[in-house]
Amino acid sequence: MSKKIAIIIERADVVLGGAERSIFELSSALTAAGMQVDILAATGRTSAKHIHLLCPNARRVGLKTFSAAIKKHLENNQYDIVHSVLPFDFADIYQPRGGSYAETIIQNAASYQSPAMAIYKRITSFFNFRRAVLLRAEKKLCKKPDGPIVAALSDYVADQFKRHYGLPDHRIRVIPNGVKIHKDIDTSSADKLRSQILAHLKIKEADEPVLLLFAANNFRLKGLAPLLKALALAHCPKTYLVIAGRGRSYKYRLLARKLNIHRKILFLGKLRHIQNALSICDVAILPTFYDPASRFILEALACGKPVITTGFNGAADMFTSDRHGKTVKSPLDITALALAIQFFSDKTNIKNASQTIAADNLEENISISRVADQLNNLYDSIIKKREQK
Image (tube, rainbow, N blue to C red; front, top):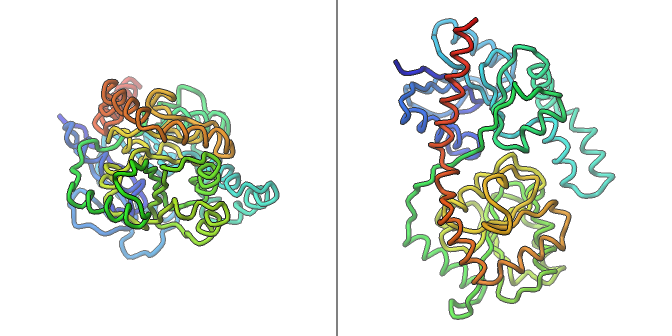
């Protein structure tokens, strides 16, 4: 008999991307592995029968209200496993898609770079009511002796729960993040995009350009300012930076002009299909101040592209630095970041890394199917332990 799984998420709307898209991909992978999966969301937009909107008329739902709605649903519906991405202590598994709230606060403050501003942001973060509620719920969950297993997306996330909450090893299971690896690329649209990029940058294919792709919606947190400084320091005439995402670009355009690299960068805005952009760029780069396990970096590896990121990105667990890409310790190490850019400004180094990614079969290791298999094993162990009581 197949297991019946409830996955709790705040909003059911795949258009939002990020955690929402990850959960829908995971749900599909678990279903493909033979499980029955219901998604329990507070709000959203869907007509799917397996998705239950528990507070459909509310514009914004508090944790307490959502908790009550879930408990009422669970009274009338039986599940073998309750798997939550929100810190509910009655769940069997807590899988925080954004890492711990404690680390999020610290690294978000650090991304402002100014020591005074970093201190200010850390202090004022506690005036964010919703974040404070979630942080308290997470602390409570970790202190509860028989609380949920924390399914960490990376070693980085696992370490956060040990450092900030003293969570013991037996309450943590590292299940690295994964993505859907077999995604169709619209070659016609991709080729058109490349032509548009080259035209905007006023370069030709004959110039043999190297295109770095940076994709994020929070330019500050994901390290765009350090990246621009590193690009200027690297001084690679044939290397250009393509920037995708919904972030506010004005101050970064000013910085690029100040650094005299404004002719070497292009803001694309929001892209519907990042795979098309990855297919026509050479290297994915994300010098982030904080990322539990970046989907963008994993998707780049799945496309066979070398990557550059930082030690504050859990996705660094999924590749070998100096073999498949480069991991820089901190986004504030501009020199190290510039050296990484210089290394991958060489087409031979790009080709070698891409061939090694394929030879080492990284694609299968970062597959969402692998995540589903590991979660299935965790589900089985929880059920078995429950039956032994």
